[in-house]
Length: 297
Image 1: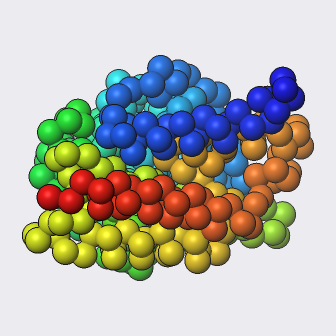
Image 2 (image 1 turned 30 degrees about the horizontal axis):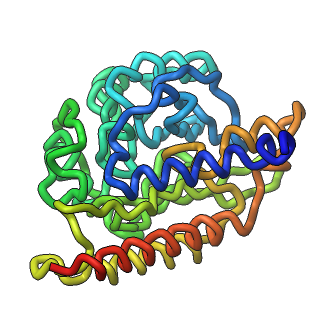
């Protein structure tokens, strides 16, 4: 029994976090969200610079870097210290991207942008939410999710648009559902002539509750259709290494620790990971829709 718990604990924890999110309390902070974690190379020019419980991803090139997500406001100095610990300069970050505009992923972006001089870019809905400090009436967590320092200027990346910094090319995939501006990002990282498809898939957790429904809303008749499309879109992405805003959702840190000391990708590679991630999301979304159908208004 002990072996079962050890082997399956990361996956069990991820499902527990998703269940909490579906219950509408995903904004409740976890201690791990600010717990320090040593930065590490994921593969090639892709690095983990986040905390134990929240991802921040650095993608580097000789001509400048890209940072995806910033975690909580109070974690800004920790993220900056992780970047410096890897030998990179904060001022070499040219662009900061965001998965979705909740405080646990966007809270530190304003300060990180100020300290680095980087331009912040996001989806059209995400940009509006970032500039409002998370005060977005269309957000499922509106009124309950904590606000955070607003980002002064955010450039819009269109769906399917590419962000270029030096040799880095990152593609935006709009995946609305968790928030209206949710965005997944893809790029390639290469090492020793071997290139892998990297996917930073945004949360596919459907947040419902008495104040927000995917059904029965005449002002937003396409919410169900949009979320199903987002789930299908993530499932179809070329996907060698899956990364997620909450690392437990993809067992990122656990997989990195299991790959050994030679930095070979090993346990990090799972070409079914995006499909499995989407399949779990589809099951949870279907369960939420059944619950809404039982409480039709």
